[in-house]
Length: 562
Image (tube, rainbow, N blue to C red; front, side):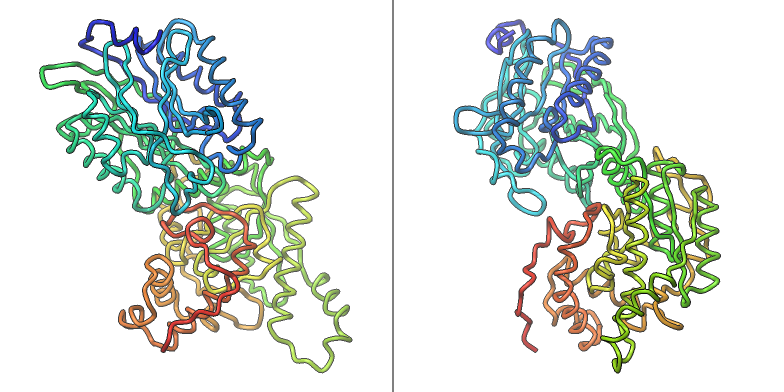
């Protein structure tokens, strides 16, 4: 059916729209198409008229420079056209895909109806900030007109198109009756409130109801929480889909004297705060492991809080049978650490093997003895311990195929309190974007809750002795983190000020911090950039994660004047 034919029909008084909040995989045209067809079959059984999918669903989002590969964007268009031809009777489909036209490539939404691609709309406002770089790969579209669909004029702004008022204003002026917004909106701590505020603003300005359809799932560092929703024209919440799970929701719409209203739809409660952050870490890890085909994960379990939290997240993501923990003691490893690691492994039900590192460390030390003679022991010998552990977990990964998960938190990565080719070894880090105090909070949250879809046990997953213990790397006698770093409540406040808010040094000092401590932390933050460039990818939780959001030069002599 063409859009012209649709517009010619009598105006309907009711409409059923399915919101397909699903988890695509970038580049998996077969798998994404199957998800689409399965969701359409569910919708067809409910007598649905139209199924709406997230942004770039058919190709997966974000495809980044894969878009520039001619074979990929040609395959995407061919797949969409073939899909339209074979859909047959039943609900129409509104789906996002990479769409080449001549020498341009667009981020597009297609209406597939009546055996054809009945309408195409291009994304206008291409984001080019933070994690987004769409201007690099797509051409912006022109301001769109509504899509005529079976007697209803649908406005289809795509994701960023609603973050300003221009596109929705154009659609409203052109007679749109309902706004359907496909999204690929990644999660961060503040994002759910920000999205809702943006949607409320567009509804207020346009006077139109708005359905916001977001994807879920992990894609490298990004995690998408779903949490799709519908606002009626009076700004009331008519529909709220659950976060962190795939869901096909049937919404029923009626036309009255004042336009369309979503009259019936499910309303779920959203997770928020520490619970939402924990869910993001689990989902990001699960999808990274599963979508890349790893059989499971292996990690060093030290008896400290960071590795304990990562172990809990790994079990919640994958199940205990896919998590292998390794305790690697040395002469500075305390009996308490050994006991805590064992208690954590038992609480989570995971395999724990012990591999002492003394033979490896002694071998390296003996090999270097001649060169290091007459030089006192220092950080070099500490790093040899860490690197011996890194070699061991990587060897286990190579032998058995499980991916190494690394466990360094954002506080440590900020100031370089990590060893390259040692404890930084690994393929993925679920706590990379969590400051140390957030690690403690999420550990306590996990002991009180089992996350949605989590495979781990109820109750205390992380022993209380791990949470209350003074943190230490145990690389020398009686070492604690605070030998080298300020207390974590001080350090984290300084780092949040410098990293998240880009406060000047004077502004951080004005928060009550010692000037010498602030300048030391600032110096360490700059110096550690080269380490962060070599770190494993990890789940993005904040609005300023290292890597996609915050891209500082490694070679950088700028320092603020005293």
